[in-house]
Length: 228
Length: 252
Image 1 (cartoon, rainbow over the protein chains, first blue to last red):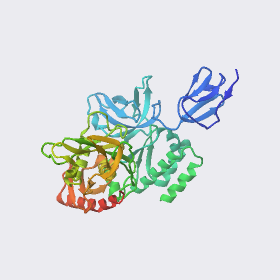
Image 2: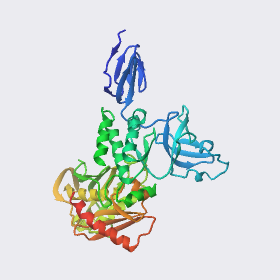
Image 3: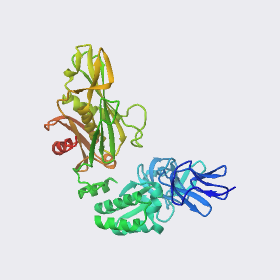
Image 4: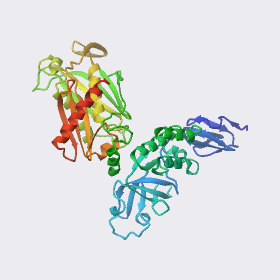
């Protein structure tokens, strides 16, 4: 049986497209094996890493992963915790014991901590096979987000907005003097001077649209300098 | 969140960089639907609204035997926003259709007597359908502008021997004598603004929809929101609306 790669690295592929023939290739994220072929499951950019073929989707809803730091909105106050909307098809639960670094007494008024409609920066602590998600507020940098504004972006572009080791978001923070929290779920919280915030939003929108291009860092820098 | 928005408005800067009394980019395209007698698509930035005009022959209402029927219906489709769900029309959808309806009806924009075919037996009915494609704030003004645009281009279908031929349209236009256009002014804190973003709509204290005809006559009002408006508020809101309406009218 011959082994053959049907596509080139970094090519855009569509669902159902045969990417490679033969058992020598291994299906990675966003692909599956059909008989002996590796077939695309998503629309996106294909990456061939040795024998592994994976697809980075162009867009799509966020799916929770353990250790992801996300921005959630309180949609319900339960008996022993809060239900959060984390911009994904499934809600997350923040239980009372994970709700705060301080001890929350049983029967306390939970709205004192997080009320309906408020935003929190939290971390995914557990995801079951049924996608029931638990989040926690115990951890460094996790906090309630007061004031500021929330923007929503394509969750698949978040890694690019953060940049290598946070370089891109650091650049925006430095140029605009804004506080920025980026959630892996595609929500971004920004707080700063109104005009500077608008510059930060413009920069983020620019990265979102040009994530696939090279040299985005330089053009973002130029864009922000122009807007100042 | 609201304090933050107010802080921004205090400096006269909106979340998308506009000024308080500035509209987003407005576009109007005509005859987007083949099956409607007249249609228009209106966009205000990210807000997209489709409006279609359908015509038919019906019996008139008993209290207005010599007038044509006129009806506005609005649908806030789930595809336009995650806030909307399918099913019977929501209060929001009913308000949207009624505000558009009122503007056109109360300004007597359509000469309903000209729609009469035979008194107490047959009249033309004009049905305006508003469908939201993307709800990114200010649906009211977009729907109002769309309804007016669609009515302006709507033409009667061919009507012979009691049969309507929807495939052929005559040159006869809907008898439109006035051009009502709604402008909604929102109040957040002490600030007045137009063409709100969804977040501004959500945090607004009050809003006033002012429908204005071509000669800047106010023909309908609709107030929304929980906070009462003072008479000074209403006066300055109408001033803004009267200033905005002619600019918006140019897009038609």
